[in-house]
Image (cartoon, rainbow, N blue to C red; front, side):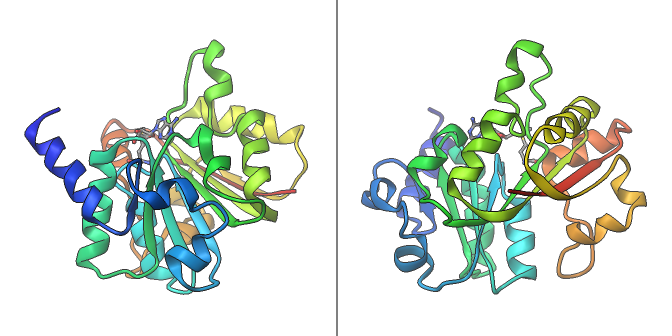
Length: 223
Ligand SMILES: C[S@@+](CC[C@H](N)C(=O)[O-])C[C@H]1O[C@@H](n2cnc3c(N)ncnc32)[C@H](O)[C@@H]1O
């Protein structure tokens, strides 16, 4: 591990907002996010595959009456989000370092109110379709921890992931489906504006839009 990475790992170990292996809370937080971590009863919103957590931060500033948890397997990315949350002194932000496949080890039934998926890996190979974060397998995982009718939001530059997700939800129990293949020309952009009314954009999105990709958005309630 590089010195920089080691230092960031150490800082994550010291930072109360980062929950990662090696901390006692990592193994017993399931079902206790309200009482042990946020110390309130506000709804819990997850950003999965959060990277540097731009949405976790942007939405947490906009909705102080909700709690936000960014989840990613990469500690150095989480470190960045946690550092910004510290600078902004946001009381409603946490980061969890784990693989998304293990969500049910960290959240109890109905503990989660909403999920955001921002530019997750589209997993373009057909044999990897089950690893897409909107595959039936993952939707079932979200049902196990989510409140009834919770919102799922997907923002992606990938035509494949957008079309795939629209196909998947045809066979799922969902409601209130809304979508656009051109987010920046759609009234749905309102969902993505920060406290200053600017669109929240992530590192990956800036990279994609420079290449001229269009941004797609889907939201629905999972029943
Ligand atoms: C394409 S990046 C997008 C990051 C961020 N949402 C953005 O838009 O900048 C995908 C992210 O998913 C994370 N990731 C991929 N597979 C994961 C998994 N199984 N569990 C947790 N995180 C995962 C990676 O570490 C990476 O940060």
